[in-house]
Length: 147
Image 1 (spheres, helix red, strand yellow):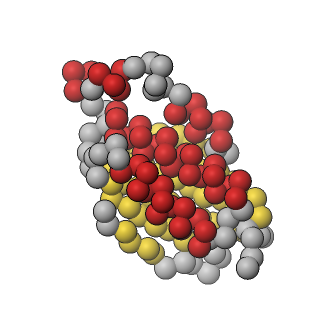
Image 2 (cartoon, rainbow, N blue to C red):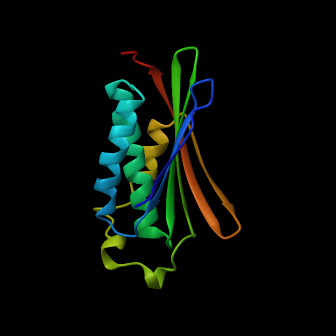
């Protein structure tokens, strides 16, 4: 897994990009890394948990329902001591029904992730271009806690 951190812009913008292995076990490893990023960004606990849940849902969606490779882009903007976090997962588009595993089709275990993202996000959407699909969500994370 490769991590690249871009330099923060003067208004408190920051971005992290993660290339994701196409493995369901990768979600928990990425969550641990994202938790560290959110701690470094001094997000309040509630905002951080919401971001982690959205990250988990979008990553799982890409791993289960899309073609690799997938990339997670996590960015933060601070404006007037209020924060917003954007979570964006880009993959190579949906797999065909013949390529889906049987566990991906179990309605009791799957199918609520995008509803959770929609409920937690201030804004969310899907962008498709050049054979890539990006699912994104923006979350208001309230006041940035200063240490």
